[in-house]
Image 1 (cartoon, helix red, strand yellow):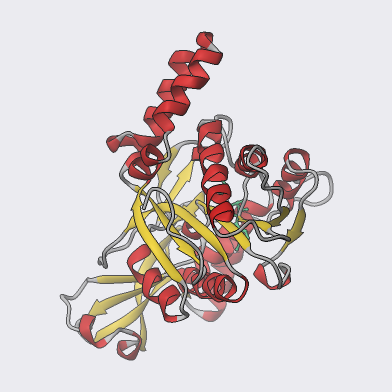
Image 2: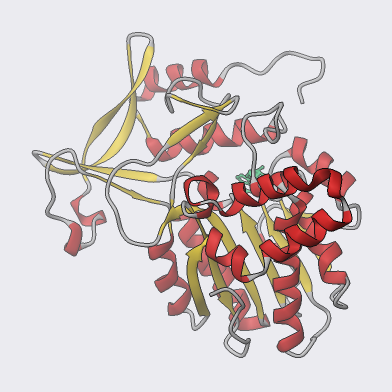
Length: 353
Ligand code: SAH
């Protein structure tokens, strides 16, 4: 949170000046800088913030992730030291719930949080006091299996958009028109950036890629092959290639124009899981599967867990079941959200895939 001193200049003004002086900026630049500013200065989660995530809906979410990780680790031979690594841990709620659940099965890993936001690190410290913080995966210990979790992390990484024009493929750029930011086609030919199989398309077609997600998948896979371990990447997205822009902005629980308030709204894009599986496999890492969140949580026994929590706290029965339905309901988070499972070459299959 901003305290005292000069308030930071609005990102809108910075972008306007940049575009006036140097010309349009790429969608990727716009999204990357907007989100860096957005996350650094605030806690966006919860009813009083901009959006609500699965671990904030119910403790069952983090607990079942902790159980999945413990089950993998036990069946792989209980190797130690072992490290829990979470990417973009938000308030630290998922980490806290997962670690508590895993402990009941004898798994007590070192805890490593990869987080860029100073505001969120403070909140994580209160929830997961024994954690170590990292800016990226490079400083995570190079020995011992890694149990990696990322929930709604990849969707925050900047996407690159290419748009088909009458003259061929161009990068999609952000320009200024009067008072507004608008998306336009850039002037440099980008045909060589489009895989040959997808090169012919109707003018107006948009291809979206996420170089940051691809690089992260590549790095995770390399670590799992080297050190052993398993990973769960959970996000809203799709498991087959698609066209079109999925860039969206959310502020105070409502969708707003993605170009309206840079740095003041959460910008996300759907994760293309179909692009990530071949990347991890190319490194010799196991892809356990990509399934819907509803399917995965049901296989992990969320319905039974909701029953036993309700028996323990009957006064919360309705709230517990409503939260479970929100996590697994087809029209809610159950179908749009996907769970991708990865594991080291000698690690077992995972429950739920
Ligand atoms: N996983 C949490 C929070 C999701 S919001 C939950 O489910 O509640 C996205 C998270 O990723 C935030 O913690 C944000 O600060 C972090 N984040 C976004 N971009 C990042 C980056 N480039 N590097 C590290 N963390 C990032």
